[in-house]
Length: 417
Image (cartoon, rainbow, N blue to C red; front, side, top):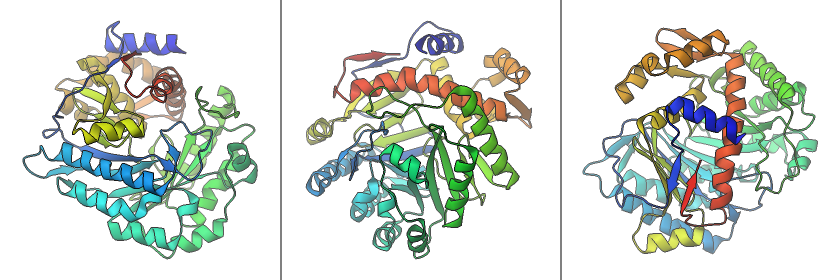
């Protein structure tokens, strides 16, 4: 797998230079001139640690969580206070972990961010099914949250058992959602589990829409090497068939597809913290993507707090982009939305996309991965599958290696990918 991603990286960046993440960082982040900037906040605490989940997380204890949030707010002030005036940003997403466990302090965090930023496209928060109750939903709504994402994973008992998740009552979730209105109610599911069928996924999606969701996300199961799960990923041919079937079904129902794995039954319902040109990340393990760099905060809650207490950014590793490397990051994550605006690429880089990657685009069209219309490249069903397939290689070759190291080392010297 690493050979495939290394060869692809070398070809597309026109260089043998690897992605070199080094133990260094800028004491002040230069983001004031960045356009279409998003915000992300990581809250790593969970009531239960799911063995399939690769994200930075630890068991919830109220006093530990509150101490962490105090430091998180300090980080926001450290970063935001360098602005000369309030800056418009697209969106704010809270992830984890289970950020809804800190629902009573989400408003405090939003207020801290609003001292420096004007959020134009709303605030989203992730919830566990256990958090879907009137008290938590009311608290989040009062704080200004208008988008929620519920980590359902599956409505089927056999898959919940396989994932080590306890069962829940869909009708109870439906009743609670009716009490507090949100613009977007998204529900997350995992696909490509052992023996999972189209009928299983169809049941999950229709159940979600029937109990109050207007947006669903169907993320592929990836067997990270450092997690303790015993679940094994589905074979390529079965996975492609399943993804094609569910995509075709969603299209036949008139659902809007706004990314590789997300569909909505109303066009205005959107939930994605990934498809943004630039973003600032706050909290342990949070990442920041700017025009010239990609940085990752330490995964250690203890070391994160030590850095903040010293009035120092909690950055663990920084990648300084070459221009071609930044182009690949841009295209990879923009393509997640299933389309690329060639004019937007030119505005961002000052170069024509076809002049930079004309041969690759020609090949992609010939292979049936892409179509072009009115200056936009659109991913076909075949293209969407192979994007997913390559993303799986990328995840296991790059992210798996990096996160495995960072789970055990607060500040590695260097990671070369």
